[in-house]
Image (cartoon, rainbow, N blue to C red; front, side, top):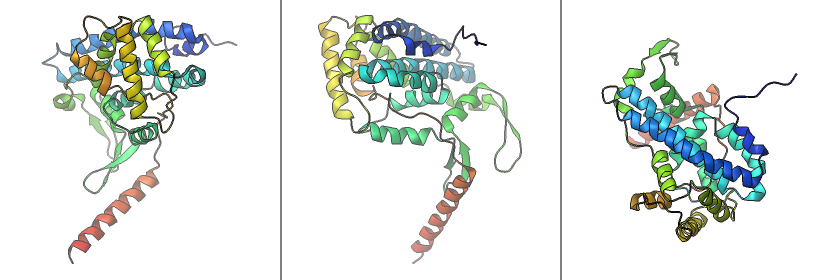
Length: 293
């Protein structure tokens, strides 16, 4: 019996499109996503007396804007490789909250190449990590935990085994924030003309010349960024809204392509966390003992 797959969450449709049709379809969606992200952001600015609720909307804006960056990495992927990657991207990245949050945060990182970028991502996709002066506390993935804790009342349990209630309003003082980098960057790319069909085509033509998989990094990205800027200008695609801040974001914030990066959450066994905590404790004890001499 065939299962009906109608309705939303159908981004896998991108997998069956031709290369040209996919570019056109993405170009159609980019302005829609940007408008949605801006809507969440603008609404958050109206909730000065409700910081927790405003923070939830800022989070929505951040993740929504990250979708444009994910789709643009499909655009930036070389034609010969995109068909083998697009399925994983729409299944493992586009709909995954953790992947979108990492995508958004990664725009401010400065890795030298794809290999180092993967290392940075690896630290953010672990299910749990150690926190505290001597790594004494076992904590859940911070990006997911902070997202869920602001949004929902829930029951939490930690090592002491005692259940406790999470009160989303306790996060009120840390959820207002500034405009997310993912939204700032998305607005910049739009202003520079990249969200038009011609802009998407130009992006694909320029960036598709290099496959970012391991040692490719800052040098190649800088050259391609300059080449794309020149083409956008030559073709008259830059909009009247473009300004110096948009150029700065385009040149300095847009991360190297992440289409080959693994975003799957890494489940860290409790035994490993406890062993690492024990090692951190004894390393600190030995260090203090050495200082006594």
